[in-house]
Image (cartoon, rainbow, N blue to C red; front, side):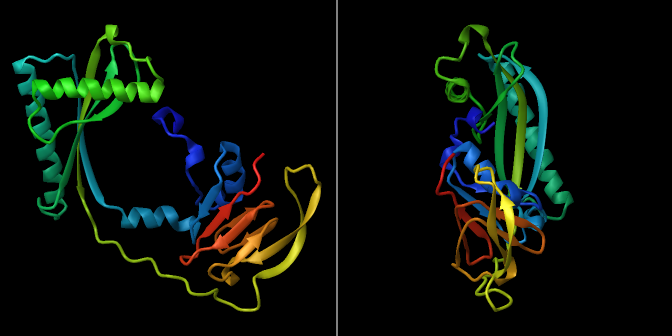
Length: 258
């Protein structure tokens, strides 16, 4: 999915959360060719944190197939539909006691070549759509299509369809500041022991340090192999490097690529 969007996963950091994500993070990172993985503090509750701190968004959409170019009556129908969807979004915010001020609207349309199944979402202008806007939409659709599926993949002879019209409204909510973590919760060093662990390196079992996550200090560097046991997850560190951020997260840098 990432490659289909024209993005190279090797250019990004792998963000691993949940209870199992930290176990597999370095191996997935290496497999896709990336070099860095980040594991947040309390990774098992990351989804809940995101749910409670995300902006409030309401979306209304309707399917109505239109094939450019559009005549005057079709443009009127299109603009009427977008206005209706916008009012429905506004009404949902009012119903939830947020009022109708401070809403940021985004209007989009999913477009495709005729007889194809998959659509691509293209932004619509925030004013009444004109014939010139339709020409711009087609250009952006073709550009996005070829960025997604490859140069010269667009097949204009098939014709283009506008399929799903969507209006989203967003109200930004105030987010709490994440607490900076100045030190581990207990002293005495982070290592609690060691055990034999087998990694996919062909070296058999390797003596691997075991660390208590709540004893890591900010900026502390750990050379793998290591295993970090935290309250809600276990972080596996192959023979690479990991350090602790000021927010309690773990930054893993892979020094060796398979």
